[in-house]
Every structure is written in C-alpha cells, then in structure tokens.
Amino acid sequence: MDIYNMLPMVTGFMNYGKQTIRAARYIGQSFIITLSHTNRLPVTIQYPYEKSITSERFRGRIHFEFDKCIACEVCVRVCPIDLPIVDWKFEKDIKKKQLLHYSIDFGVCIFCGNCVEYCPTNCLSMTEEYELSTYDRHELNYNQISLGRLPISIIGDYTIQTVMDSTKKMKK
Ligand code: SF4
Ligand code: SF4
Image (cartoon, rainbow, N blue to C red; front, side):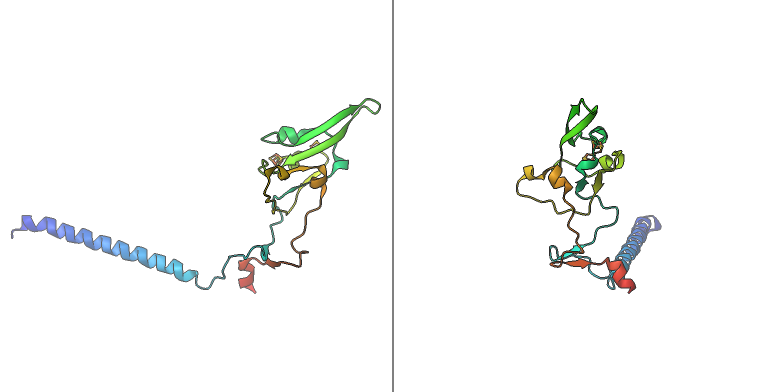
C-alpha cells in the first residue's frame, strides 16, 4: 500500500480519535453534574399536605377595600385587558361618584399587578392566596364582597405543614 492510499485512512483514524475524546469529555461532564446533585435535598412538595411559603412580592388573589375606592377607573385604564368592572353613579348633591359594585374575574386576570400599582387610594393589593381552582369558571368572577375577604394565611393553617426553602435547610 503506497502513501497516497494510506493518507485518507490515517485522517479517518485521527477524526475518530478526536470524536472519542470529545464524547468521553461530555460523558465526564454529565457525571460531574449528576454527582453534584447527590448531596442536595429533594425539592418535591407533597401538596396539599405540604405547602411552600410564597415570597414577599408574590402576586396572588387581589384584595379590594370598598370604602377606599373613589371609582376613578384608573385600574381599568391600566389593565391590559380592561378587566375590573367599576359600576358607579354620580351623586349630584355631593358632586362625587358613588361606587355601587366592583368586580374582577380571576378566570381572565393575568395577575400583572398594574391595577394595584396605579390605584391612587391603595385600595387594591396582591395577597399570597393562590388556591383559586374551581369546577365552574364563573365562580372566579369575584365581586366586592369576595375581593374584600382577607387571605387565609398558610402559616396559620394547622392542617398543613409549611415547607422551608431547601437551600435554607442545607445551611442549618
Ligand atoms: S383605581 Fe382604585 S380607586 Fe380607582 S376605581 Fe380602581 S380600585 Fe377604585
Ligand atoms: S392584575 Fe393585571 S390583569 Fe388583573 S385586573 Fe389587575 S391590571 Fe388587570
């Protein structure tokens, strides 16, 4: 076999060797990642028996204070989907708007927080409540009475166990 016939074979062997080394490096890297997870705690939460405590700025169900609302409709204008329903009448004697009904449909709300951010009287606030599931989507349309209900605190619920952040557990 002359040198010209051997050249492609040698090049092929060299390429094969390079590919083998690269594959071995990738396998080694994946093993290192797997090993780095061995001393970590599981992050699975056994809901509903265990619940995680939401972060301070969590955007859950909106709370509404009827008495503070001035029916200005800023919340409607800043809402990307014009969602809040502000029903009012003008009181001629006092020359002011009188709020009659207020509602937000959580089946449509995207929990962006714009209404809370821009409300001039701070009568809207985001709560830590996230368990809004229901069999009937119309039940998600909350009126001022449902919106005025204070959220149920997870810490105060004795039937469930709150779960601490796994990273905090490891520091202990
Ligand atoms: S922005 Fe606030 S005060 Fe104005 S209508 Fe909405 S909830 Fe009421
Ligand atoms: S949270 Fe966002 S989507 Fe929901 S009512 Fe407020 S502004 Fe509209």
